[in-house]
Image 1 (cartoon, rainbow, N blue to C red):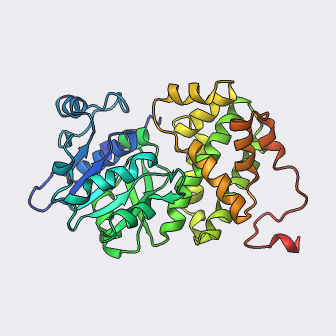
Image 2 (image 1 turned 180 degrees about the vertical axis):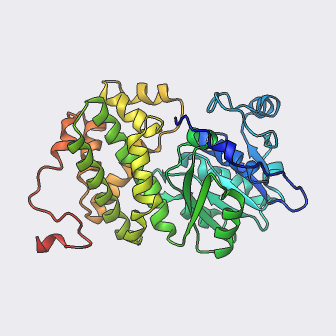
Image 3 (image 1 turned 30 degrees about the vertical axis):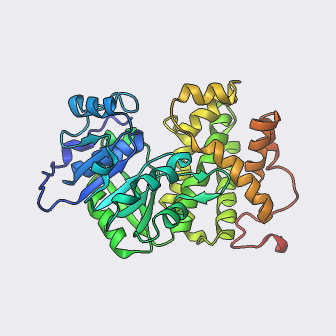
Length: 357
């Protein structure tokens, strides 16, 4: 973490209950807490919903999320609640930071309390079995609501510490984009806009795959040349797959693409990087995820994307090699070796198609 104290350069914003945007974050994990804390700093009337009543009470009393961010004091104005109706009814924006396996269930629970709220996903994952992204689930479960997705290089501890960072709000609704920018954009946290919901969401989900690979590579102390090749080929894989699903390849040149990929693949703060590192050190998947104590979406994403890429006939050697290493007992060296075969290919296929090599 940087020794520079950027928060000293920023004036605090007081919450005006009469005019403040009413923001609720569903989910008390590290990133949900970071976004709730950011909204309070921006002068929003902010709640965070946490399943466990005792945990919510503790946060209100101590202003510390001891499980996920034990080293940080949260803003005094952040209110934690455990009742969903209280959290959702009569709010302006609902930010959903729930793991992908529980995302649909929580949306079904809040449906009776939804009126005119915008719903924005903070979850970077894919629903198992259905291959639904979080925006798909919002459309299916809450078809009338305006929605969006938030994604970018957003390591929660750095954001709460007041380190400068940026993210992307993607929505087909200009009003949703503007409202989220008003709620979260500040001197230390920039919120950029996009209308490529597919691209931004896919970037956030897919980069978790490669964070696992880079964590594993770090455990084996591979060279910088190898890391660079994995990172750039990962960007190529992401782009190929996403374009097949309707995304704009230029989206991957931004924060939600290469920005998020770089941060997640190079930082020990990344949950998926930590899992990959543990696997590279010889631990089982069960041991690695248990020690993490949080959800690492990358493992499920590897399974889902490998199956879908096979269906769509998309060339994704890193994803397939990772699957073989984690689930079929192949040696980790297969990840690097998978990039060294299959003949000549162009560097950037959107510039030079492979069949012209």
